[in-house]
Length: 239
Image (cartoon, rainbow, N blue to C red; front, side):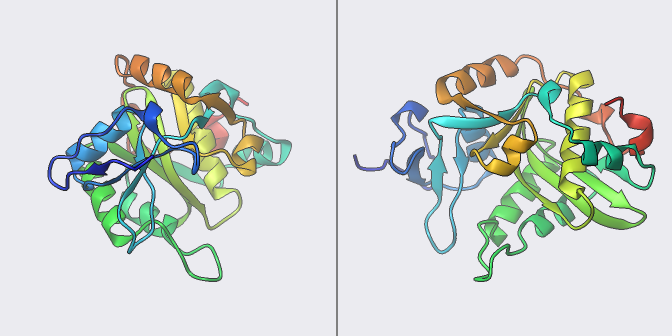
């Protein structure tokens, strides 16, 4: 099957169910990273994932990795970290720093899929209020975080980083704890990996994910409730 080539100026995405089975989820190539394009893609369960200088590749895997906020798994070691009062958590206070840290190379070859174009596109989306970050601080040091795109009551996580003790896990735990109170229905983690499974993630069929995504459009949580208020972990958590 030949991949659909999206128009550079006015891309129109095909049905996600037409995605290839090998490689799993590859749906289309081309298009752009404009705000309207990204929002159209995420609303249909599609996301970009590629490395420059390759063209933009769009994906919708047949199996989706998700976390139900109430099912987040808090290990004994993480529970101890969360109960300490030596860190604080904010949201949307340092989006550009979070995405920059997420773009740091993680292999010996120095590769990263979070290119300058990706950073520019998602930062622009953040300024419209559709992309969000969660930051973890120890004093003035940013030790962890996660960023992604909000589609109603679904948070489509893009990437996370950790530069300290459980930094990214703290960010996810707070996002899930807040989400349980605020009406966040689902965290989309896109691709299954062993690390996410240890945090309570599960694998669901694409058709079920698309159903959940469609229903979630009608009940977006109020991100301003999480806002820019620092929340000490020891006070916040009941786990």
